[in-house]
Image 1 (cartoon, rainbow, N blue to C red):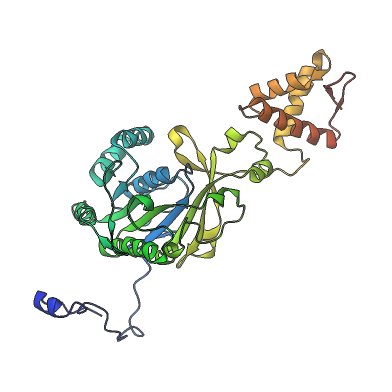
Image 2 (image 1 turned 60 degrees about the vertical axis):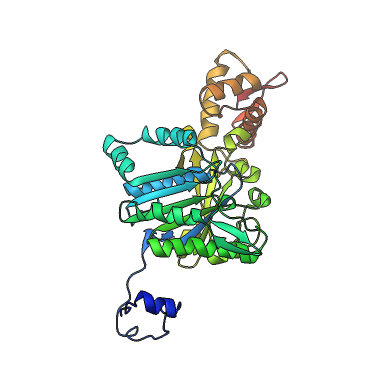
Amino acid sequence: MSVVPITPAEAQADPYAKWPDGRINGMFECKPQPKRWHCTNRLLAGRAHALAGVGGSSKTTWQYQIAIGSVLGRCPWGWEVATTGSAALFLTEDTIDDSHRMLHAIGGHLAEEQRKALTRQLRVYQLAGLPARLLALSGNSLMETGVYDWVMRQVDNMPKPVAYLGFDPALGLTEGDEMSPAHQRRLGELMDRIGIESGACVVLTTHARKNLHQSDELDSHASRGSGAITDALRAEYVLRTMTADEARKFGIDDKVQRQRYVQLAATKGNSLPPEAYAPIWLERGQAGLLSEVTLDQVERGSVGQRELHALDILKSANATGETSMKFWRLQCVSAGVIAPGTTTGQEKAMERIRDALADAGMVAKGTGRGLWIPA
């Protein structure tokens, strides 16, 4: 199957000359091209996707890391990068200093050749403080601006092939109303058109509704405002911080420690397989960089390695007599059994460890108040 080119005169006479003619000749006989993935079974090449999250959920950091992975061919959270090439980020809330700090932190984990490859193939456009709207209001309609033309010139001048384009956030790219389905769909369609015309995977970050961080189960259309933007894109992913209930399940008692973890999950995907919807946990490490982590669920009252380690500490301390909860707790913090954090968080963690050991008959109360001994 092929498209017959038309002359400029024909195009001017008929603006729909390049539109599909509706014929399906050869579609039964010819084998179709395989689906083009940017990240296998996660992100499509040549189409647009959304990444939704509340403020502070590491959306921009995610964009930096996936763009770098698009050049280097690997992703820090286990996704397989199937299509590599050059990448660009259009960041309406970042300054040059913001990018410098982020890229310098990432570069500390890379080899010299990898840094050289990124210098050649990665573009980061810091647009904070600039009128970076791709769409401007004209009456009640949205029209493409000169900024859109400028963006496409940057994409055209990038080293080929162009693998990834990230736009962050949606709110900084349009004058449209978040609550208007027509305006939100217009932005989504524009992002998808950029992906189709460039052949790159496009990801647009959007602000999520505020109650997202209170949800243990995520559903589709997490983006704030009209859900029409999600409908216009091929897939939606969500980043959200860990809830208090989830933290308790994982034995994390300190709020500061809990803020280290964010969950990445697909909530909509026209082409995603079922396994793509399984959420993964990411840990925010040095400079906020994300890496995949496995968290073990702790059943209430269960005795695991953490509790057994704390019991060994109690036995060692009891060589000189009964042990106070405070001394036992401080020894557990020092040994890394309890994570550093607020005193309240440490106390709660210590109480949970003590209760699990007591329920199992492994520790008992001493003769004085607040004193404990191995059973």
